[in-house]
Length: 128
Figure 1 (tube, one colour):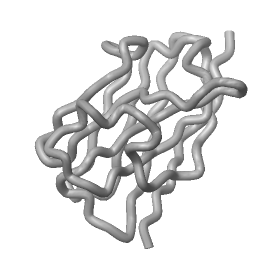
Figure 2 (figure 1 turned 90 degrees about the vertical axis):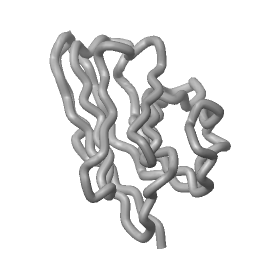
Figure 3 (figure 1 turned 120 degrees about the vertical axis):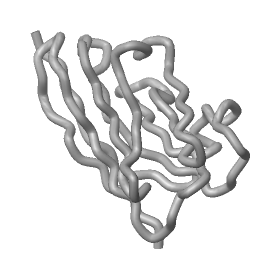
Figure 4 (figure 1 turned 180 degrees about the horizontal axis):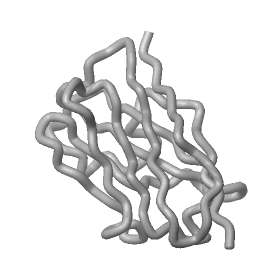
């Protein structure tokens, strides 16, 4: 049974940093897209950062480029999201997601419908 468990969400001041983790179990995603999405009330869930585990290539939303970094550990069972320079608009529930099929890259895997497995989410709050 595939499980994704996020952690690391917290309340942080604007300009601060936070690191999220997502532990993946039940399957080895060695050549797949693993992603972080976020969602605020009343809005659609949007992709933040995606990593293709086959070659560590990454894709970022324009709003987080240069501030967020997605990575995976050597064993490939944990994906991280390092968030620096947090802004008020970064406050959201952050979700980890995994795509089962290997498409070779993640350039067309930007929709929630492209992902088969989801974590329960971890809340990030940004305060003044």
